[in-house]
Length: 72
Image: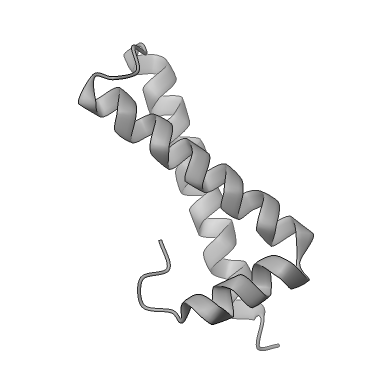
């Protein structure tokens, strides 16, 4: 998700900000579930999959904003 950012910066933010940590973990969990569903490993209906994708996107957007605002 944060491919262009330093992993050490991400890890520091995870340690310093409990909300960021929780959202980061939630995003990773959703990412794995979505990937498994798309591969057919996790049987899931299309409505649930779409909802998971939206939730994952909301988490990513929030994480991105939190990462960007860390400088302020």
